[in-house]
Amino acid sequence: MIPFSILDLAPITEGSTARVALQNSQKLAVAAEEKGFHRVWLAEHHGMRGVASSATAVVLGHIGAATQHIRIGSGGIMLPNHSPLVIAEQFGTLASLFPDRVDLGLGRAPGTDMATAKALRRNTATQLDTYRGDVLELQSYLSSPKPKQTIIAIPGVDSQVPLWMLGSSLYSAKLAADLGLPYSFASHFAPEQLLDALSLYRAGFTPSKQCKHPYVMAGVMAVIADTDEEANYLFTSVQQQFINMNRGINSPFVKPIDHISEICTPPEKAMLAHILRYAMVGSKQTVTDKLQQFIKATEIDELIVSTPIFDIQARLKSVNLLSEVGLMQKFIANK
Image 1 (spheres, rainbow, N blue to C red):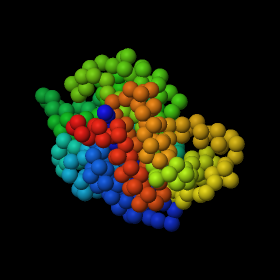
Image 2 (image 1 turned 60 degrees about the vertical axis):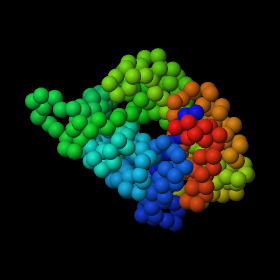
Image 3 (image 1 turned 180 degrees about the vertical axis):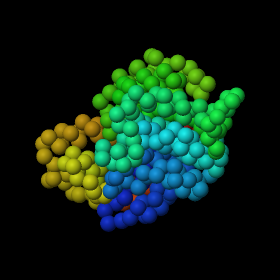
Image 4 (image 1 turned 135 degrees about the horizontal axis):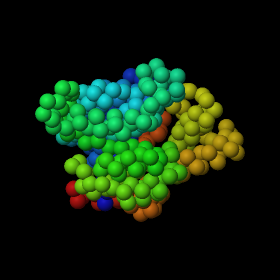
């Protein structure tokens, strides 16, 4: 009985626009709230023709205005791209608009290519050396002001927006443990170090004001349809996306195809099997069985689910079917 949450990248689909993608993200958030999901997070990516959530805080305002109580947040903000003060002001503003609903998930990757990272005015030479300090600086801006504090985030100061550490490596797990923050692992696209990272985080966790005990979230992809065959068909969109990324092709989110093997080389097939090993694809019963195995193996406190489906109606149906999974229904019944 753990919370289920939604991770959204506001996918810009082939033949469509960013405007439609953002409208669809709002529809998805409204549906997630109606079905009892705990959070909706959006991710910061730049320069990707298939992602409309680059201005993450702005999109969260769009999502928050259309919903009433579901938590909204970043999954995540790539902090090395930004001044901690600016992020404190952005999320302090969101917290003022949507009290007790806002989460601030942080990552240290650029979320883009290096040329775009430089265009973001990012200091690529010192990013790893300053990340921990940037997190602490950001946390201080969102906390109660100290005597004689000269730099104040307004809005932001004393908002107590909860921070999350996001990552796909042992580095992020150790930092989350050291700072006593909740931790979200990106197993939906980087599964390699999942179990090692969770073990390291739990073993080294230091209690903090925000978090007294370790709290772990992990990500999976979920594509659910009436039948396994239909779900596997819908899943070919994200498989194509990873193939295109591997080939250096920057394209909108593409339509599904009948047979992924027709465009996939043997090395690419192996790559997909590795990267997408935690993709839950199939009917409601098939996905239920896979989720039970995943949750048992990881002992996570919360599940966050990406639904990479081309057609918005099929995406909404997948979320609806996910909400009917017995594990989630038990959580809702006991809230």
